[in-house]
Length: 221
Image (cartoon, rainbow, N blue to C red; front, side, top):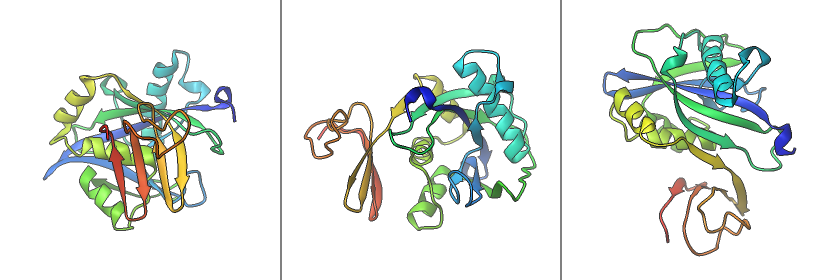
């Protein structure tokens, strides 16, 4: 699928202050759908009804709509903070060009899921969600894992929003390299990104999805 055939999409990462710190709302997708069985944030493709407007404006409206449709929570569009943008690897069966937004949830909300498209939900600390993946309880896609890892250093909602506002949204155009049982997602800035050589010496910007444990490498080696 050419990039021109890719599908604009949006994901919203609802954040609240829980009893012990930052928590984010996660949903488990029906195993028969795209990203089936995975734990994700609310999100989906941008629809015509999300227009008119520019790319990010339409993505904002899509994020608000998806939060309402998938979890029955109302998000203020003006509160959304752009966090990252993801371009899937070439060869992916469906390529969603996805904006990720942080969304503060200041008041108590009742999350309602349809038990069809969405099978389960929970408010979790980012560290807890990552630990559950490591224990085999949760399945996460790389964008979700990277998002949780970055949020895991924030003590509360305000800290997460402040950090996100302080820099431009990170852009991840993914290149996948397979070496036996180890799959790596490489991004711009990695020495092996241009030609897909994961062994190339130099800088690193990758997620190594090793069965023994996932590792995010960003420092020169």
